[in-house]
Image (cartoon, one colour):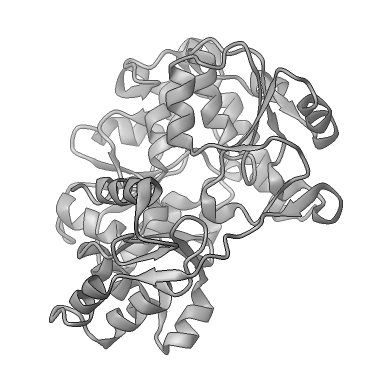
Length: 388
């Protein structure tokens, strides 16, 4: 294993152990426990004691997903998921670039890079007084439970922080996960986003349940008599889902350790069949897009480029560098055009590592026929996501 990987994993384990300490006092971090700092020399960091001292004046930004934010957060934090894109627009609503109030980004623990990436982007765009609290949310809960929320409750209860040992107790390696799936009481659930489902384990009866629907079912306790076998892409979501399972009385559940990415694709997975239906365009909506005076040629080309590549329930996943080359633009122009299309409600997009995941307005383009309950349901979901 590479040294960098070992250091990151070590820091993650230390952060989790800190979160589980009894008595509310965080463990002291040594410099080596913060493996990401050398990679972001232009970003200032802030420790727990200092953040406590400026807490009343600071603008605190949580760059994690909505799901993680709902589980655990610093009380006054604003949720601005880095993966959703457009974080700079959110910052503009919070503070001017040269404002004096400290602008503090945080995520999970010292091994989480999202806060550093967001802070670096802000610094690069001219924001002053920018900091990263890289100890992370669990260190904050241990130090200041009265200024933290865990599972909707504040002060955060340290007793409700899930220990590393309890998490490991519910992890299964693939051979055991596969064996458990044969149990008649087992329910095998894939909680990945649709655009991550290129491959799936070679198991029967897999149910694809989006996280929002799964949480609703868990909260309503409809599967308490079932054995839940849950997997995601890389195991990162199971840590957070466990809080909801524990809070709602579930005890017989397990997660696939490492998710689908840990499996041998040749022996343990199969490719997910993709719907072969063609993409349908609404001529009326397409005309409105093409004649919108607020758009330039790039926005129109990008919208058609993305819509023509729809797959997986009106999502399109593009390699960013490939898209830049095909459209003849750089990263900044590609993001700016995507932001303008999102502002007008033609699409939503997310940055996932080196890819861009677009969700197309079903009223503009749809893989299949623009009619029926499924299409209308996706229209309502999209408009809800737009806040309409």
